[in-house]
Image 1 (cartoon, rainbow, N blue to C red):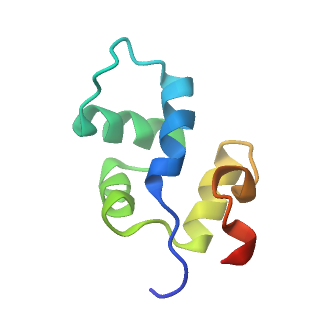
Image 2: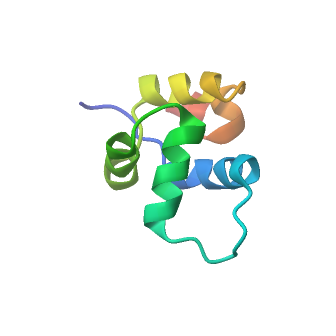
Length: 80
């Protein structure tokens, strides 16, 4: 898959706000599991996004699942 890739890290504040972890230390394993729940996908998908980024189609789908526009999450959305 080619084209622009969008970082999973941009979603971290949104996932943490909706999940509200009890500790400031959150392992990537716990984060990925909760991110999958919050983002409406499975854990394997979150691991893939962490490694390779999200394609434009996935980024759009995730943003809409969260009730947001992708440009509100990824400032480079329009330049991609």
